[in-house]
Image: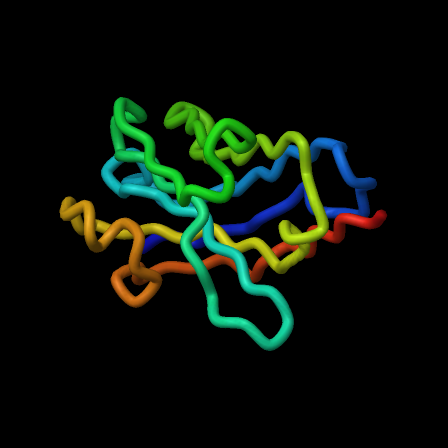
Length: 126
């Protein structure tokens, strides 16, 4: 099993940056593919980014490409989400999640993730 704890959220102005971290417990962290999702008030949880267990492949939703970067450090059991050029549409609770699935379609589907953190709030103000 994997326990996930997010941190790094907060209030930032439009155009600013934040770096989210997700610390995992469990000795098998390096075998999980990891994802970041977000949920804004009144909206469904949506895929943001994912990274393979090796760190060799990453995936992004179109709205964050070239602004967000997902990375991981398996030695530290941590996955990161660097968010730059933030805008008001990025305001949401951000969750990290872990999945054992290898299928690309599963990596973008929140129902295919078995482990979730508690979420961290990101608010972008104008």
